[in-house]
Length: 217
Image (cartoon, rainbow, N blue to C red; front, side, top):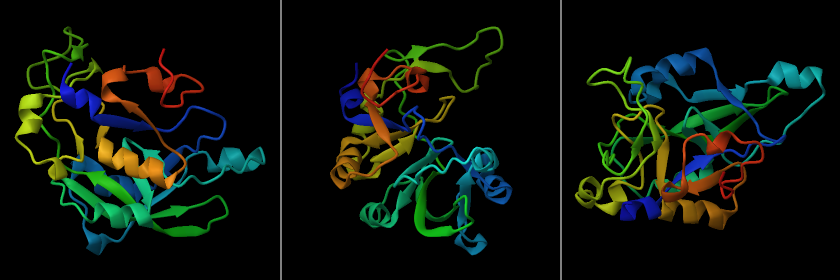
């Protein structure tokens, strides 16, 4: 196990009845394609309840959490945006976002943490790799059941520049948060997100009903 497996966390929404499944409008999804850097000239990214019509038919109105997760990226409130502006993290944008609720109200004081570059820091020897060798070819991303972070790679990067990242060559593109970011989120008591330490994480555990970021299976 790497020492950094104890310092970094993965964020997830809890699997319960109050989970809001966030969707992205088509234009925003097209802009994000290929994990490119977003352009402010094109305006903010737009998000909505992916099950808006179904929820309306059943009379369900889910609470809007402080933090929302979509496609391994995170929608955050303005206070957290201001906090992250204190750091210059390569490959990371804190980009304007709008959430349109089920009553078509616009929540504009939001940002999305957009990762447009990946960091080559997977320790292949310590990670549990589960590639389908029948189809996997050299150069393909790897399927990882249990990731471990490379001490050699991360030692070479100042801590302030690796507080948030995604890993290169890794299928699934989980976003990794340093303990300092997690501590801030917990201190602010933001709703909508749970964290699991990399050292404790196994792929799939986040899909169990009732997952709270602590329970292991």
